[in-house]
Image (cartoon, rainbow, N blue to C red; front, side, top):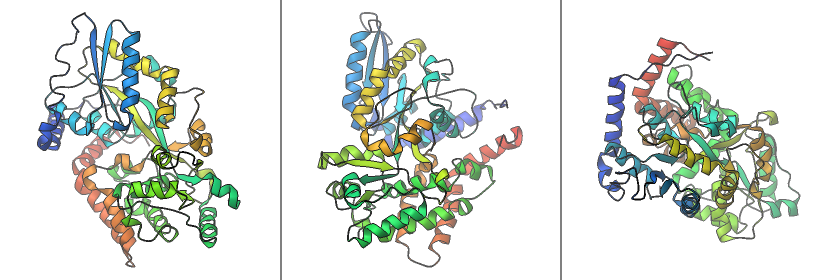
Amino acid sequence: MAVVIKEKTGRERSAMKKKLILAGTVLMGAGLALAGCGDSSKTSDGKTKIEMVQYKPEAVKAFEKMEEKFNETHDDIELTIESPNEAMTILKTRFIKEDQPDIIGIGGDVNYSNFLDSDMLMDISDFDGLKDIKQSYLDIDKNLEFIPEDGTYAVPYVANAAGILYNKEMFEENGWEIPTTWDEFIELLDTIQASGQLPLYFGFKDTWTCLAPWNAMACDLSPADVCQQVNKGTTTFSEEYRELADKIIQLLPYAQNDPYAFSYNDACTAFARGESAMYCIGSYAVPQILSVNPDMQIDSFVFPASNNAEENVLNSGNDLQFSIMKNCEHKEEAYEVLRFFMEDENVQSYIDDQSAVPCKKGDFELPSMLDGMKEYINEGKLADYQDHHYPSEMSVDAMIQTYLLDDSENATDKFLKKFDTEWVRYNRDLIRKVQDYEKENGSNN
């Protein structure tokens, strides 16, 4: 079905610009180190200058290698890749100052949604590399659009995967089997606990880690587009998140005492040392775990949050994707940079460096700790992280932590009511915009 796209009005663009200005006013000084980049589009010897800013500081060395290799193999383009700390803060500051790079490397999350809604990204529908991207990851980006957009605005590069990491040696020694349903998972937790060993370890002192089990379980228990449905007014979080809220509480008795006293680093270290059989976290934690215990045998499985194994879905999102800024003056050269990154050899190099999941089709070698998830990755049976749709101002991670600490009888009702209330508070303008769009264009669901 064709989608009629309403052109953004000047008023809407102005409102979004004000939103970005408000978001970055206190951050203006942060971008001074990068100010002035890209003032000239040509080098002294006539090469076209292309600047990329990417947001993953842990991947600086990988990007440095990419930059060096690109410049060694291209005589007409000079690529500069900036990998600053607090990259999103610096990018927002630069956007306000109208000092934009040519390409940005960011995650598929609410920041991408806001940049797209601000009419800042180029439609790259004619980029030939898109045909090589798995449809499931392109769909994730479409699901991040506040309202349907006509076009494609990002090239998903690599994803991560989240569920349960487990100590493979411990499982083999004890004969524990991988669960495929919620009941089997609870039975496994009981079995491990009865053996005198600790089933799970949490690092809930760092509130963001509360989102790890939340996101992984939500893939089975909530619609992937639940946030869009709420914005349209067709459902509520109280309705869609109740089972999820009930089940996440049930995990606590199987973890260490007072998980709120332990950080993410503490949890990674404890799991690496064999203090728990499992760790509910994403593949992004594996390098940290292996830094403590390089010889640890880690594997993973999809979180079985429902009692229908056929409904199991992998929690996977676009961890790194590339967008070209709308005002980029050298589109073809920017495309050449993207083609370079998309070469199989370079994709594999990044996978190896970051224990990542490729968004590109092909026969890539995945990290061994993803063996238990390969079927879902290859089949594209996955759903995005719910928190990629949450506004940062809402602090959902802290809300979940507070809920987990609440032992009152009506804790779940209070939490869900607050979720609905806070969602409206921080998304009021967006909800109005979405519902206006629905009234004018009708729903395609």
